Length: 310
Image (cartoon, rainbow, N blue to C red; front, side, top):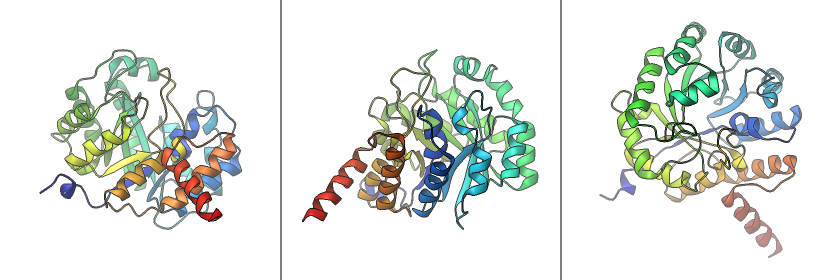
């Protein structure tokens, strides 16, 4: 049996552009634009759209209107609207806004945890214990996200065992799923497989997700490497929105259009309309005053134009 025949037949794609993407864009984005982007993505068929972050506007000004975004979007049945929360105050705001899933975060690198959230990894997990309790009481899904799982801008290499240890801590916290994030995009397929194999020893593979940035052009290769192990959930950012403030030249998550093009080309089911995502990417790129960062998105747009000309 070929490797491709063993890939998961259905892949969940979590669209993170409205949160993880836009929060790292320098250009100002209007509330109306954010609302339309979320609605376009939900209409395209994503089961989970990461739409907001209830964080300090001082540190993340692009997310200052998250409550207004959540209040204005037309909720689509079958779509989970998720949000990042850093603490109890953020959790209270997220619950008031009616989110279906909250995302808590730590890092696989002690150096990154100290620089980014001013505490140790253990302390960061402990801070989320009351958040986890609130999620359980409210019947809201809890997802954990682990930054710098494939490398850190401050300490360099990160051992797979260190990532697995944080996965274990997040599972103990009560997280339904855990994201393995290559925040600065330095991972390669072999390293990705080593990390996921280590993490799968403490949490089933079906509860792990890949979150790959494309700084070194490895994101799609890393997705395929994870697919070969049975990972069936990945994050992507429409039009390749975003970046990483912690590493020079770091790009955003793998572009959703590029990921979908590859997955559909492999014959895998996502339930997402690629053409609708291309339209959403064109929309938000125009709002930002630049071309889409998605290669597949640009190519499909060009093909459409040529077809229309006959």
